[in-house]
Amino acid sequence: MPPENDPGLPDGQAAPADEPTRVPLAIEDWLTVLIMAALALITFANVIVRYFTDSSFAWTEEFSVFLMILLAMVAGSAAVARDRHIRIEYFSDAGSAARRRRLAQFGALMVALLFFLIAALSLRIVWDDWRFEETSPGIGVPQWWYSVWLPVVCTAIGLRAVGLFIRRSRAPR
Image (tube, helix red, strand yellow):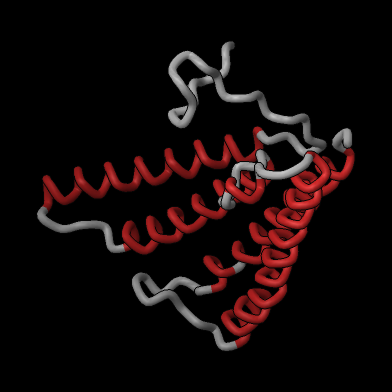
C-alpha cells in the first residue's frame, strides 16, 4: 500500500515511512481507531435517543470527555514515537548534522522527563481518588476509573520518548 500524502508536503510527495520500532506503532494506531469508534457510537446513540425521546443518556458526555482526553494522549504517544511532536523546526533543522542529532536527543530526553514526571505526580491523584472514594460529578462512578489512565499513558509516552532517544543516538553521524 503506498504511503498517504501529507498535507504539509508538496503535491505528489509522499510522507516518509515510519522508522522501525521494537514496540509496534500499530498499538497507538489501533487504540486511536477504537477510541474514535467508541466516541462515534456513543454520540450516535445519544443523538438517536434524544431524537426519539427528548432526553439523553447522562453518561455520554462524561464518558466522551474522558475518551477525548485519552485520544489526545494516545495520539501524543504516536507523535512522539514517530518524531512528529511539536518543535520549532527553524532551530531543530538548522546547523550541522551533529547539532541536529544532539537537539533531537535533547528534545526526546525532555519529553521523556516531562511525561515520567507527570506519570509520577498523577499516581498521587489516583491514590487520592481511591483513598477518599471520589466519584465522578456526572454519573457517580469512582473517579479513579478515569484517573488511573493518566499515569499509564504518560508512562507509555515517556517510554516512546526513550525509544526515540535511543534511535536518535544510533543514527549515523
